[in-house]
Length: 235
Image (cartoon, rainbow, N blue to C red; front, side, top):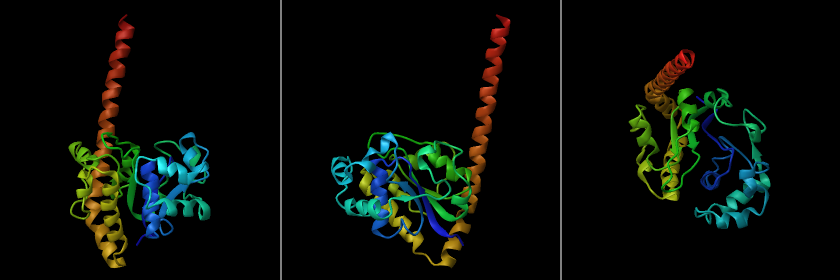
């Protein structure tokens, strides 16, 4: 049994991440899980947090009407939540996470860099739960899971309904993800343990596949370096 049902790490609070926070807060899921964010952040990208939040939300590309009051509530009453690192502003990219986040939670909700229509983005944010042998859902570009499968990774159908991956509108895509999150969180302890046992094989395969890709990449880059070095020496 894990201390929390899921983790969801948020540093730069882009529109889709704010939407996610607001919808999770609607069902009390922010306070009950490892959901990191910082409305006091001084990051340039996070000016939305330190100025007129409600006015900024009106200008976002996502429909924030249903989450606005929840985000304002969070900012006023629980403006910051961190877990393994207190200063979210100083974090950047890979190797800034600890295993504690994954050891203490059942699955990961990945808030990718972008969820815009027509924009495609897969980053280290998905690789982190894979490297930590953790099941995950991805709120990002349409077809994110399809892209991972094309590169040899496995996803979690039928243990998670992944039809959300093909939903074009970001708000609708997240609502489908939220349905899965609530379903998993509402299971009793025995059901959660059984679910985790069911996805272990997929998680282990993904981690091994990731390490294999990384090893092959290092070998290729090493060969290129030696080839170029020999050219320089020959000259």
